[in-house]
Image 1 (cartoon, rainbow, N blue to C red):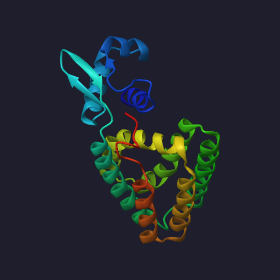
Image 2: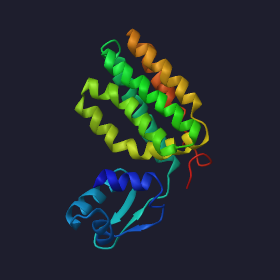
Image 3: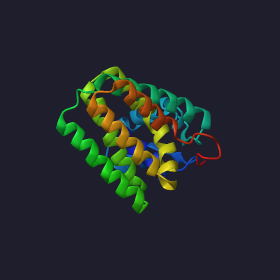
Image 4: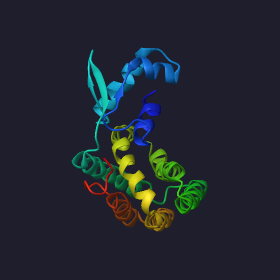
Length: 201
């Protein structure tokens, strides 16, 4: 439930300022209100909604400061991940990352932001899965949605820089250069727009 509602907010199905009603969401997802309430609590903790128990739940406006903070945390986590798994990825892992980047490049060229976001998430998720650090996974899951909003802005404009950085990252991981991979990962995440002019509101 959480991921479905989260993605709807990130993708603009639910707009900033829009009120989310338990009953409507339950009907939409075909579930009872209990898991909906639990999902909304998680979304509130992630900063995507403001929930007032017994009153209303509203989609938040995009906060440039919160997006910047989330980006910095995400960048630190991914840099840590790639520094630790460099040289440990299997040939299949590397091949899957390259294939994800090819799909990412194709999606960016076609202006398919949803496909670009999905391919990007898959690419970066492979090293995270290989490392298997549950604390890192938990932190990424918590802050991911705020950053995905910023990614949607970037990929709707020009994602070619990301294609090139992805390729550099993959090569460094394959060669075992953890320091280089961490530096490129840092650059990837810090290229996200988080200022008020860049992030849609």
